[in-house]
Length: 256
Image (cartoon, rainbow, N blue to C red):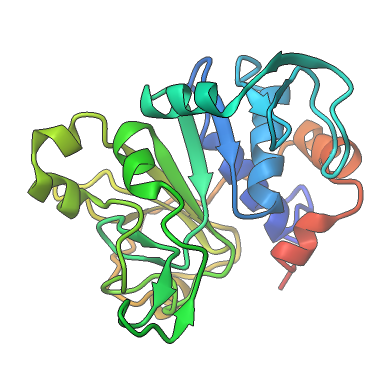
């Protein structure tokens, strides 16, 4: 457990994921890559971002906010694939995606590990990420912060980073926006002059040395870096009793 509220690391991560959508307005929240991002999106809608649009993962917009694995009881709209693409390419979607590799510029890989001509491991492929990352806000969720994921250079670029977008010119940078990276150790962002990763906050109990050792490139940790905020009692109740009563979050981010 961490902090004075007795929150687990997974619960701190869920709140950090929720904060990704603070101030986003009426857009489609697309949490992918695990249980914790889904909890985060639903927590945001139940607390500070009621205007968020959430889907059932298929083709319906949910009016209520069910627990993980439960069906929505109230549906407020149909979201066919064509309409979903309109939201994505029009910038009205903020996706929280996973990453098999991510570099300091925000280039992301979920396609393969090794030389793409003869990869050591085949992953799930591009999945439309070159277009998505150039047209709507994107953040990333990494449940295991390690040098194998936070790498000096990704093997294949799926999600477009700041350096690649800049090299491609104004057509690529016009709507390109990487917002945040949430891991099981810290929250990172790109709010630096060269748009590379920096530490926004350390989760309770994580030391700068642990974070540096788990990162595959030099990562500065300021002496005054804040701690990631812990859930409020009301948020803990929602996480534990309403959104994830089966505790799936703890399987994704086990308590140390």
